[in-house]
Image 1 (cartoon, rainbow, N blue to C red):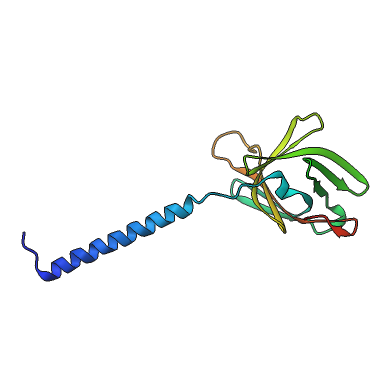
Image 2 (spheres, rainbow, N blue to C red):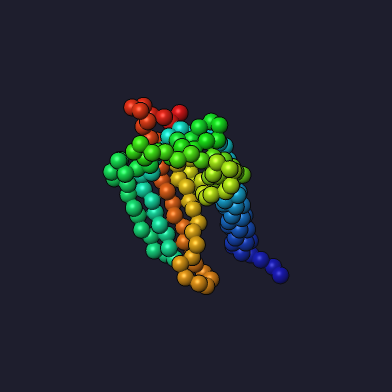
Length: 162
């Protein structure tokens, strides 16, 4: 098969486009496989309060904002793995642990598992936790979860987040 000069240019252009597309696909794949942030117990130490709660139920989303600071619970995480939940003049004590770099679990005083969350985001000014919940109806293809967004809390007149 004999190709004229124009056909050879079109073939080289097609090869160039294929190589460019392959490069872009490999770059996108590498970015998608980028390792996620691994958190530790030290990263969460400080006092946090809930700003909002998003409830996702099979495609429906409800946002609940916490507007009244008197209604908010303060979650104080210390460097020894203790969590103190405070509201008004009451408090509850728990243990916490960051597991596998992306999950936060609470345990009671006896060390028994209470609840687990996936850490979606954690920075000095924001903590976002996701908790999967049981389906509302029997059957497959249901997704129910809650996302809690926290910000640093003030304890005794000073910010407790370090």
